[in-house]
Length: 224
Image (cartoon, rainbow, N blue to C red; front, side, top):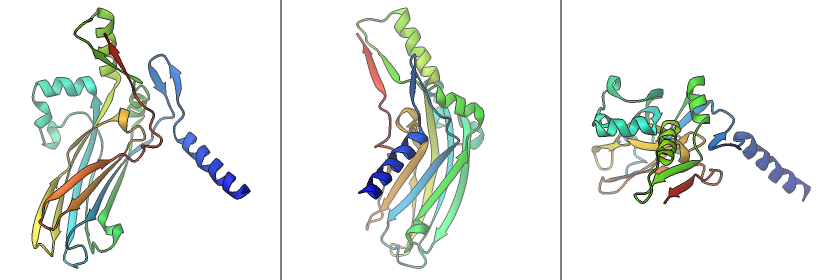
C-alpha cells in the first residue's frame, strides 16, 4: 500500500513541476517552456512488414500572435509556402528518412527544438480568457480587451509533409501535415501527428492532444 501511495505522490509532484499556474489579472504566469516537441507517428500502412517500405518526413514549426495570423489571413499571406516567405518566428525545422517499418521505432519521428528566451516570455503571457465580441454590445473597453488578447495569444504554425512508399501498394503517398495549433490548447508545446495509410492508399492524419489530462481549460468570455 505504501508503495502505491508513493508512486501516486510522485506522479502528482511530477505533473505539478511541469507547469505551475497562478492568476495575475487576465494572464497565466507559468514556468517557461524551454523547448517544443513535434512527433510524427506512422501508426499503420499495408506494407509495413515489407523491407522496401519507407517514409520521409519534413517539418518546420513557427509561432506568431493571433493578431498577426488574422492580419496575414486577410492579405492572403498564410498561403505562402516558401521558407523565406513563411510567417512568424522559427522554432525549429528538420527532416528524417526511415525504413524497416515493421519496427514501431522506425515509424516514429520525434523532433525537439529549443525555444529562445524571447519566445518563452511570449508564451508566459498567454491569456486565460478569450474575449468574443457580441453584436449586441461593442464598447471601447471590450474592443481594447479583445485586441490585447489577440496580441498576447500565440499560435504555432506547423508546416510539414510525409512521403510514404508502401511496397505492398507499390506507390508513393504524399501526406500534407500543415496545421494551425493554438498554444492555448497545447500548453506543454508538445504536438503529435498520427498518420494511417489504408489498404486502398488513402490516408488519414490527425492531431493527438498529448496533454488532455493536464491541460488548463481556457475560459471563454462572451460579452453581451
